[in-house]
Length: 114
Length: 515
Image (cartoon, rainbow over all chains, first blue to last red):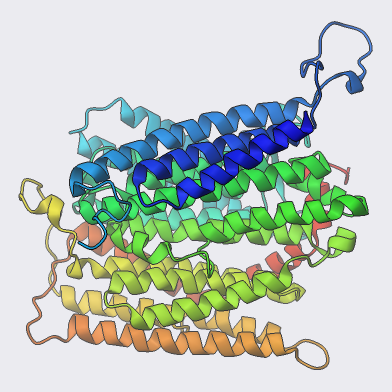
């Protein structure tokens, strides 16, 4: 499972970085989204991978922390998802405004060679 | 927690948030009411910030340093989120409130009508900055950073126009990427130490097992990269001059504080996590910070000389001042570390004043071309003399010539660098040389702008409206006031340096080990 997660993060990051460095605004925003997913998975992995362990304490009586997954990274990931979602939407607005004003979807606002 | 004064520390975060939210309910055309609300909010913030600053300056009953702690929701540290108001953060609070009040006052002349939701965004930006300097929790810091940045995206685009949108696109992309670095760094640190509270992390650094220490350093380095991008340190700061020059004048003024927040965080984390108590990690990254700081000063100074417009030059001046503080953050000299604070104090206000002086040279006039915007306030006489005088004073602070506050700040850096025991290190000499030369370059650049701006034969006397007069005059007065009280300022900075150099006091204040 560790290998699958590591590969997933790696592939997402590689694709994200590649797209981030492309000249079209749409590619940049997709790249940022992919990087965001990779980072979210990474935060999750920092709480250690545990299968079948709940993050929330249940029931009464003495609690054995070893039986539970770390809840903090899960909370962090939730916050990070919400924030990156909101900021991606904001970026989308800027992107569309730029497209509307300059008439080009190049990140410099003009086609190369113009 | 029954005394209302205990809650004073959350006011800088909660008050602008409530004011901004209530303004969203008002109709867009009710500029007067909105201007009144935001002005009252900022005046209250200035009051609170100076009350906290005074408390930090006076210190505890025994005259020792204090840090005011506020546990949100009464969850004790390290489990809840803690707000900490110590010497460094209250200083940043006061600086932010002053600058923001000046910028807001300035915007009343016309800028606040150039686009929708200006006041709400402006207050949210102030809230983000205040939260970022107050919080004692690494992830909460991320949240406040994002609040601050989201508001800054909106403000950068304020006034619209093709140039702003193009600059905004790059600005948003850069900062989103830097935020991802921030998250990676935070989660790596959490993965190693199992803590997010800064004081808690600091108390665990020395005990990190050796095989995990490299991972911890990587996490801190990645986190550092994120803040260096925001602080516009060379080579990560190429985005800054373009973006700041494209922003409208009051926005650019308050943006001068944004890069200081990046510097503030580096200062705080570097002293807290890699101080003398950090065991094998002590001093980690100092060399790199020193090199990056010096390179930033060189690049900023060169950029100032090369810049063809005053807004551009002021952008580079922001980089120079970031670099100066950075170089200091890296120096392990206890006394030296925070003499720089005096520098932030002087530089922040002055850098803000410079782009404001640039109004007469404003190419971003498009939102007003239609003349449907009523400009507010009377046009004042003798505007050239006033602007010229303000420009000279602001320039004097930027290039650190006597007798103003910039000089006192820079002199104390030199004294700290040169008064070490025994032989002086080449690094100290390099730093002294770089700082001196950067002042010289700034002098050349600003003299050129002064001559070109005020002594042209075809010059038309610039119009200064009463709100602009109040804003520029007020900020310049603050610079003068700082110079007049330079001794008190330096004592405060020196004490702050000592406070930062002994992170144990901060840790025990937050975690409550002292009791």
